[in-house]
Image (cartoon, rainbow, N blue to C red; front, side, top):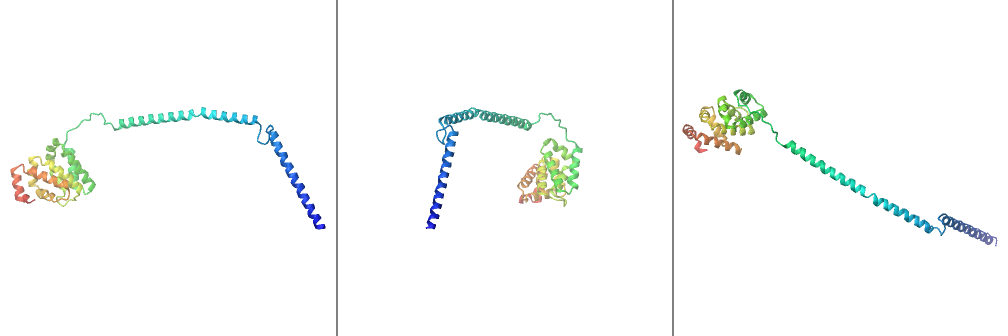
Amino acid sequence: MPGSRAQLGRTSSMASAGDSIMRDRSKSFRSVGSAGGGGGGMGSPSDHRELRQQHSTFQDASVGGGSRPEQSSFEERMARRERRKASKKAMKRLMAPLKRDLPISKLQIDDIRPLIDLAYWSNYVEVRRDTAAAFLALCMNEANLAMLSKVGVLGALLALIGVGGRPADPDCTRDAAIALAQLCQLDDIKLRLLSAPEGLETVMKMTSSTSTRVKKAAIQIFDSLCGLRVTCEAIIDFGGLRR
């Protein structure tokens, strides 16, 4: 019996504690409702109206301020377009040819002699390539052929091709062969090529080159040499018909 009395005491104390918790919760709910203006914990109708007004004000502000970013982005696009136009105009101006009247001086002997010295005495491949390219550029102008023949460019071109045990380079040989083909338009060059050491033999060897442009240059040289009877007979005697 004493145990049942103790158990009943504990049960009654727990029930009184639960009632006090419920009373505290109901008080807190009533306080929230009174703080919101009455009408329970969700707030009064005046509170809802105030919230709706604040929401509409926020929407108006967001809609009214939306045009500014669009306007700024449009201005940025226009600015970028103007910058691109200005860049294109500047590039077109820079790429345009210069409108200058440069005086072109006549080719002189002293202008060619340094190239001839390089062709004979330089062993550097790059120097010999540049020398052959310079001779090719000069021989492309028919007005320079007489001066080049007078100075003695024939021997320099043969040296660039590799006559006399000099170093031979494919690019150097190609440019020198094409320049020699242009120079052979002159009759005195044709006769001097026959009398030059290894002159005609060098042209014969050019027909066996692996470079197509060197072969075309050799054929052009033979075509020019056949314009004179003397040189044509020399080619036949040398065995040019078998080539």
